Length: 382
Image (cartoon, rainbow, N blue to C red; front, side):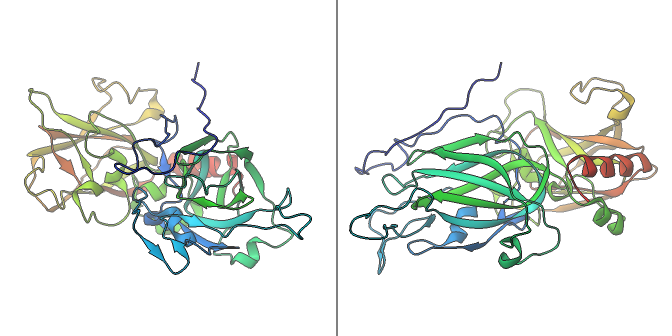
């Protein structure tokens, strides 16, 4: 049985000095290993908000951890690393408090449209100025709709998180059971306040028509629906970093393991966006100068045959790239000749180290394209 997700409510203690995260409230959440569909690095954006008086809306999607500087004040007051609205007031001296339905809102465009599995509303450092409650709705509107388009009366919004009380200085997690493809969210805070970060964890579900038009594309990329299913080590950074967009600019933007003191090796297992045939591979050790792997090998498996990808000893794993020497801080490119159709790929690195990016360029098979289209339809895509 899955453990219930902790709920945090009420104020945190005022900041008393020292480590600002010492009393931060958080818990292990079952969905945070999934890609953040709203990540700015995937193209996510807060495209509008009704109020951002104290702190701008764009802070919501910053990839880094919220920071707190107790000495930082501006002409509007305390500088906060989040989205913060002004304090709402009632209609008159007789009714000085906000009305029950008063709220502030922000519109978020997902960087990778997809099915949402869980949401984190992080109120880090908002100790007494967080919202009393939050709610989240979602919609699917293809193309690049404007805020006015999204707020039109004919747009249908689906409730993902009902109005729920939250706590200050806490990672407030919410599982989402609606399994449909969405492109935009509307975050509401009731009645006002500050939210440091918003994370929208789920499975990317790109439009198959777009992928078909591309023809050859990166079959393992996060934005195309690829995923890092498992890894031997996540000590320094998560394996999903290795299939993120763009090039890695720093060591923590790739996947890096601890130093091995045994005779084994490290690995990551990936699920491709669809069954496909890989024609070209890039293994990028960018920014790993004294800690790149010495060698790497690639193996592929087709799970449509009934083979279990979690069984790394299964004979269904086929060598795609033999154990090959890697250089530090280098993009290595390999052409594959007559590779078989695969749904999963495993990279083995010897003995340990860091991989900034893995690119697996190829095309879906007819069966892979069929399953992509079926999945799109299942999630409510056009």
